[in-house]
Image (tube, rainbow, N blue to C red; front, side, top):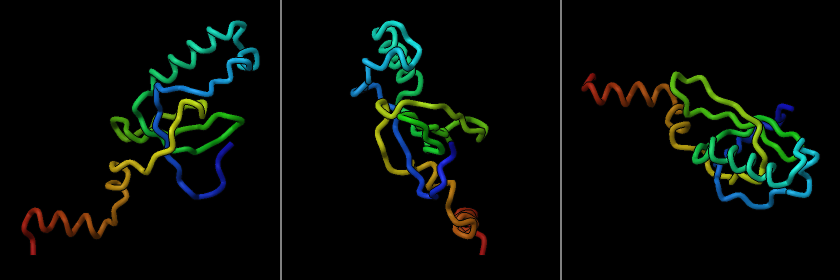
Length: 114
């Protein structure tokens, strides 16, 4: 489910997980709550330290788009919100979204064009 509002929100994937609904392990397809816990820990470890933009939301999961990939093709994955921490827009996206005139002016200054 794509988000309709245009407010961009960003989340850091952390390994400091808390609030895992272990009692809901059956709803997530796990017979054992400890298997569910280990799966969530592995998911957090896979994405840890990366910042993703929330582009979708379903139940207690966010679809995050990670823009920090080589080649500029973003990764996306559904992650549970209890392994996420809301953060500001990352600097590499702020740089990327600079005004083209500012970028041209910065290049002209760098190369000493008049």
